[in-house]
Image 1: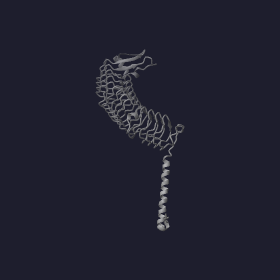
Image 2: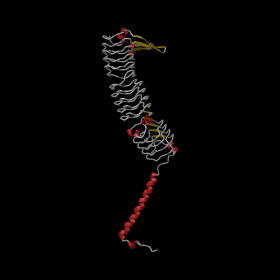
Image 3: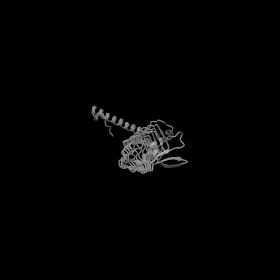
Image 4: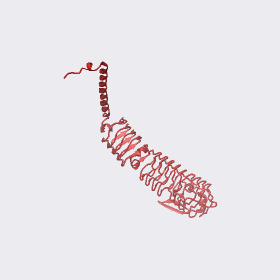
Length: 381
C-alpha cells in the first residue's frame, strides 16, 4: 500500500491547521479524563475516618447510598453533599453545615440535628420517623416534599418564623422554645402539642385546634386567637397582652399567672376560668361572667368590673404555713377598680391544709380589707 505524504497532498498552511486540530482533540480528551477522575475523587465514606473527624471538609462529596448510620458529624462541612438514599439512621449532626445537601430518600430515622445549618437542603422521600432537631432554621423549601409533622415532631428551639403552616396536621408535636413569629397556623391541628416557651408574636391561629395543647410561658403579643378550639389548652405564665380573643370560647380558660393587661373581656363568659396570679390590670371586664372562676392573687387594679358577675368565684387562697403571711398577696387585688354592680355572692376564701383544698364563704368585711377596695356599689355576700 502506498503511503500518502501530507507535504505532497496538503499545502503547508493546511498541514498546520490539521496538526492543530489533532492536538486540540488530544488535549480535550485528556481534560475530560481528568475531570472524570476529579469527580470520582470524592473521599470514600470511611466510617472510621468520619467517626474521628471534627470540623472536616466533606463539602460536595458523593456519599449517595453510603452506610453512615449512628455516626456523629460535629462541625463538619457537608454543604452540597450528595447523601441521597444514604443510611443515616441514628446519625447526629452537631453544628454541621448541610446547606444545599441532597438527603432525598435517605434513612434519617432517629437522627438528631443540633444547631445544624440545613438551608437549601432537600429531604424529598426521606424516612424521618423519630428524627429530632434543636435550634435549626426551618424553611418553606425544607418542608416541601416531606410530611411537615415528621420534620417538626421534635424541634425544640427551632426557628419557624413566617412559615405557612395553615391547615397542617401537627398534632402532638414538640416545639418548646420555638420561634413562630408571624407564622400562619390558621386551621392547623396542634392538639396535644407541647409548645411551651414559644414566641407566637404576630402569628395567626384563628380556627386552629389547640385542644389539650401545652402553651405555658409563651408570647402571644399581637397574636390572632379568633375562633379557636382550645378545650383543655394551658396558657399558664404566658404573655397575652394585645392578643385578639374575638370568637374565642373563654369558659374554663386556663391561664394562671399570665399577663393580660389591658385586655377587653367586656361581656365575655369566663366561667370556671383559671386566672390565679394573673395580671388583668387596666382591663375592660365590665359585664363579664366569672362564675366559679379561680381568681386568687389576680390583679385587676384600675380595671372596669362594673356589673361583672363573680358568683362562687375563689377570690383568696391563703397559706397558713407561710412565715408572716400577707393574705392580700393571695387575694384578688381590686385597688382603684370600678366595682359598681359587681356581684360577689357566694365567693370563697380557701387554704391548703393537710393536702386538702379547704374553702369557706368570704365575708363582706374581709373582702373590703383584702381586695384594697371598699366595694361601694358592689353586691356583697
